Length: 132
Image (cartoon, rainbow, N blue to C red):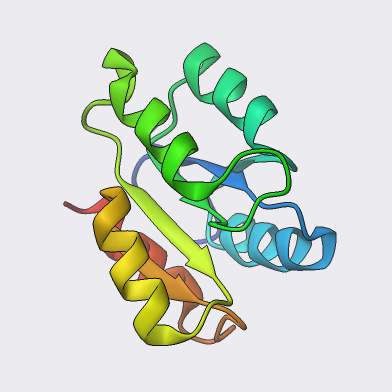
């Protein structure tokens, strides 16, 4: 997998994006794919769990306000899947900053990105969690 992609060298990372808002998902996907990442998208928690278990990604970006499963429950389940033990989980949410930080930390997330995302810095923010 170490072939050039969009002028960059190195492996392509697979990122699982669990996001129910179609516009947000499309924007994040386009930004990440433009930078050589492979993005797999689930629009609800249950399908995201299935995708993560079937093909463990390098990183999981997850909206904390999914309609079918609350953030705490889905992150707890993801953390208990042995194949995902080392996979960073980053919350992406429109909750107020202080609430979002508290919840992401309490849920065991490795990081937090607030919405609306900054299109200029989003990919770099995501990539810092891939380098850990």
